[in-house]
Length: 159
Image (spheres, rainbow, N blue to C red):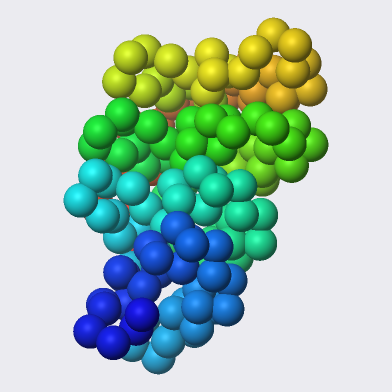
């Protein structure tokens, strides 16, 4: 798989295919990799890891300093938080993933192309996840929104 593929393509493939060892190899590469690289539809490695509920890949990606958790893809304008909520077959796992994303700055107020916030993707019957998203939304509303959003193209980390 690595023959001819760029580090960014390997990064995306590792998360799409839930290949933790490949992900570790790519992230530890001496040449470096753009952790926020996107594919043709605008998905990042974090989008794919969340879409497949790959907790180990998500945890590793979130440990990378410059990861942007609020990037929206081009097709649906969905963030990784939206992607994490498409498969609710394992609510405890999804709740853990949502908690990690929110802890790392995922904004539960962002809407996808059809106007859905992440909470809108969760059925009323799955109360723990809805409660977590509601609490995160309330907390986010208490903090003034910064004009330098997490998905801007400029690197905001200058330390």
